[in-house]
Image (cartoon, rainbow, N blue to C red; front, side, top):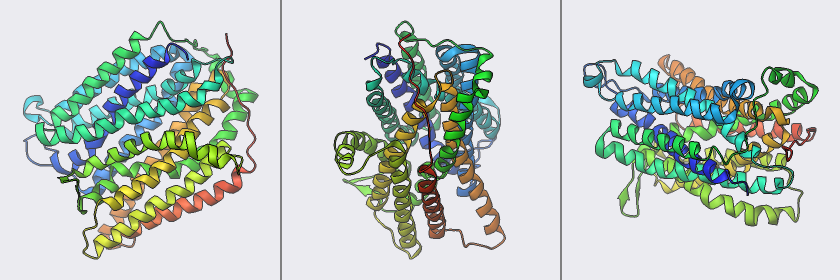
Length: 441
């Protein structure tokens, strides 16, 4: 196992804590705690807060393509991660000041835009570099360990995310939003330190300079991009559904009975269930489900993704049924939403982890970060789709049209996901790609 892997995984645990901790309370902050410059309440309605949250996520996942080009063109992965991590830390510091207009004297929404922009640049810019940096540590002699490491890399992501999505909402309730936003900033500073400590352990793939542009336009580059772009377009719809756990699922949880094991949980805390189920399902899939399924069916990456897309549909069917119960005056127990999380997490293991590993293997050696940036673009477009759909629904409701509200909202996304999965099955039969792994040099 390469010596730099523990530093990358340790960095990822702390960085994911910082990102998911901040994101876990962002929607609740916008709908319950946002102030104006005078210190009076200036909270947003659910649709507007959903737009803001998903537009931020869209920015986070759009900027990886910029980070990837900077990385492969000028700075290399290590320096790109270090420089943008400092921007990331500064964004957290500004975010901690949004809730104290009496101290800053600045309109909170203005400061919020500055903070979210800095966080998007930092978090988004390093994403493709970290994912590709993992793969760079392997050569032909130990490439058989790469799938296992990507599984553990994803495992580390969810350890950080799960802990933060439980702890950060509690910090917000007990100490206020400034402390709740500040703690993730401290963890981001720790992540940066851990990564710096591993600088002499890493395999450093140098930037290619202007060669990156010729590599993108080369036959191998054009072929890889043409092969993978359709896959990413199909995955856009998966992310449009998956990332609603931070918005519409939180809003739905507000109307549910959240008493569990003698405690009443915060609506935002249930986002952590996804991360904890990932920790359970990753070893279950790797050790039992995949080996069992492989006895009867050749389990290629594209087939895993296809199954995952259909599984995603079921999670929103459950949410639609929950919403129908709420609209009839019921107060369904949160265990029903936990069921939806189990289904969605299984889909995540099948889709997200597989696409991440598959993207790295299908990218030419000099375009690993760039291809990872293209993959992240699918997450950006998925969040942008959700934001614009919610904006459109709000406009329709203002004109008196409510046919996409309530349970119909969830049914519509489930139907769109099902249609996407059906078309994907036909497309996947014609995929022809090439595998690239870094050489021992």
